Length: 341
Image (cartoon, rainbow, N blue to C red):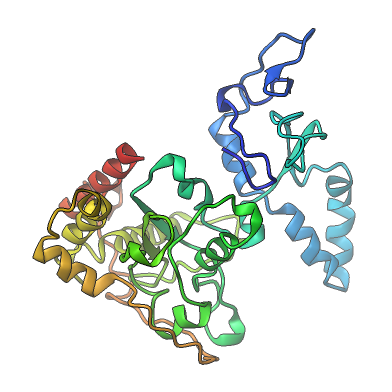
């Protein structure tokens, strides 16, 4: 579903690339094109940041600017820094759509409008989503305030702010604080649930389980423009992600798998009027944002390790070891979410 440009319609992803007009294949061109839903192409589209790289280059000076400009100039001029898709919404909703008269969609990384987590498609009321696991590996913080390339909640703030615009088409998102509050309260450094009290919104929203990147066993705050990693760096980054998802395999909270289950069930418990179990109430007290705001400017942010530095578990010289029980529970939880969605 695409409503970011006033389209308010859907298109069959399987047939992206076909020559549509007003939702049907144009007369005289009755061949349906397939292949644009290739996972590699879609992943490449969603991480297409070359146009942003060019903007950064244009803002620099000296020898590097000249060398890179001479190499990459033709890419930008030929529009090879963006992904072109035949527009499946050509002629659709002409009164509201801003792309109804263009035959090509030019797509780039969705994070360029600060929504680095693709939350908007999941908060459409028609989808009836109960819970969203928002994994944030954004590089929001800068070296100016101590630690570069850590998240500070910008992705959630951007999606929340978007719901107040006309273009949001009535979608709702749980209230979230400003970025400085995320940092000051440590919400960008540990799991946090947003939207626990659905009575605070006009329409019931999904409960958002926010999982920000943080240094559990490794500084995985690599730059967006780092394009190459050796095997050791890869292993450390993946292992750190494992610890983000499992809270150090339960080391930091042995009840974390239970709390994940409570988050998944929260909306259904509310819909059915079921009494919330005591253990879930305890989880919500620990992980739900309580509405506290602290927007005081903090000039430094350098998060410490949550576990022993470099304590990489689950890897051996031959590769991965078997997943621990907690990870299996986490995978099961995500699978449940996908079934709900």
